[in-house]
Amino acid sequence: MWPFIESIQLIRYLILCRVNRSLVRLSAIPGAEFSRVLGAIIAERLPTIEAAAWKKAIPDWMQELAMPISPESTNWPIESVLFVYPGKAHYGQDELIAWELKLLGKCAEHGFFLEVILPAIEQASTTADPRWHQLNRLWGRFDIEAVYAAIGSRWEPVVSQGRLDLRCQVTPTQWNEGLEWTSNPEHVYDRLTWVTPFDMRPAGNKHNPAAPMLVDLLEGLIDRMRVFISGKHTTVQDVWNTLPETERTALQQVIEQVRDIPLRRHNLGPAYRRWPDLMQGWQRFALIPHPALPYLELASILHLGRHTHVGFGTFQIN
Image (tube, rainbow, N blue to C red; front, top):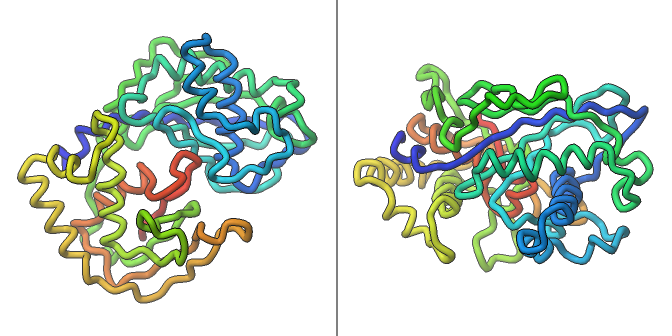
């Protein structure tokens, strides 16, 4: 699996926001709310030429305050994930809201984070802009408690106690340093729990969401890997072509191994009443083979399916 992950350029930031008011509330899809507000601030802060792509990606909701937040209503013109950790809808004074920002592929640049994204978060923490500073909303009502960058399973401080550590050198390959892509050989893995909603419908299937099988998840990982290949119109075959022969063979064998493993039970259901195609819950398979676990762990880090930008499509296995 090592050749497989060495081609992945990824920076993971963990950001802790401390609420400094008596009460704030998050929207039903907090990743979309974070994307909307921070994306608008970034677009307004950038020079005209650099801001063009951001303004093009940001829809008319910049002027439409009443427009509801939905998975489709927001995006950034860079490959990224805004994953707000599952928690409460309401937070009080001094409580922490934790979220991850993941920059992928050619967009995994620490300099861009420091120069563009972090200042936008800082501005969002104190903003009085009426578009965002609405009653009990987070914006303008938090302090940046800390920012960390992932080094394998560890989090290295980038900002702590309000101070930026300029000595911290963050690279797009350190995310996998020291990660152990192994599992407990004595443990039987059979349960997959979706931490966030997901939409794994095949292209062209606009209705009838179904419980994904293990083979769907692995094939979804291959599709997700297209983001790490240069070019505007990359395909799944392009991903296969980039793999060394030994790795390609190993992955093909794992896919065939899981292809006929049955799904025993699940409690998947609509995550939101307004968007019934977005599912959440758990699935129990007859068995999740140990050779598939590293690939599934990688898939959970990268997120699968539609709306990955707002944090959808990640899961846990046990």
